[in-house]
Length: 358
Image (cartoon, rainbow, N blue to C red; front, top):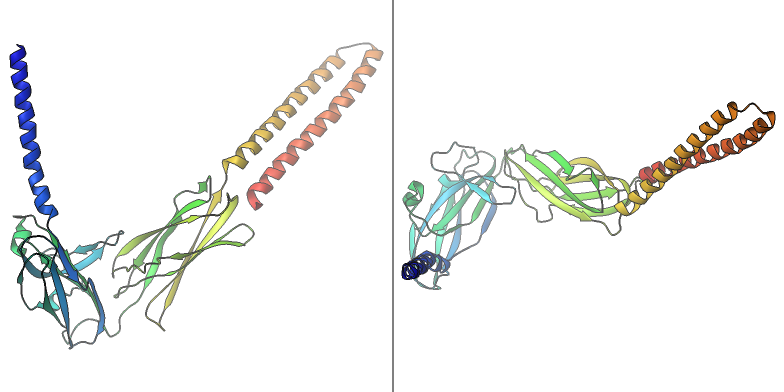
């Protein structure tokens, strides 16, 4: 029995070792792959009926010789994280395509380890090109485009971004669909803002501007730069941006944030703005205040109960002398009750002022 268990253990150990070796082979092979392409971004303005040429440098960053396949694709969107979304074959046209205008001097290159080469990318803008921005990419892949389209192979590829703005009556229009904070009430002065901007025009927009934060007195306590990296929003799409403010102190009370953005070509810029409010209520201030108010209210309740009991006891006693003593005691109780009520009202009033105007 022990021998059988021992042999079974050896079999499982050998099987685990074999699985580990087999599973790590593709990892090492893929880890050695690498492609470099430059420039990574081509962004120009062009007239209809003109031609542009660009030299693209491709580098084999792997330690072995590789064959690379070159082809083009259209960009139809961009994610909130800034990653382009490429059009698949047969996808519906958006009117902002570019790939049909792109021609590469070759569709395949072979490079040795660390070797680089240059290919020519030609952009032929047709006479009837629609004004506005057009987007596409040149891909460098380790697998042919046909294999990629049918999913018959898995490889490593890179792409640049090409943005050509055609001169003419282009439409530049953007709007702030949403500007909000993660919460309405915060326990400290670390506030996260999010803004969703929609591009309703025909050109790429890069909204940039100040995010001003004011307290209840209208005093500015912070000034941030929104979209400092100048990330773009593709036509007909929207994109969410996030920015965080970390105040110098604990902060307290109601705040207002004003987002003012500028977009468009120099001399033809447009502005959009939005406002959001939020509260900062630190526990170190709010909790002691609430505890103090609760104690005062409790004392008020006890005082009222004692006052009522004394009044009832005094009414049930028939002796004048006792009545006179009860009246004196009742007068003292009434004074104490009025004092406690005044303190309660004052504490509550001060707390409200602290919340609204601190």
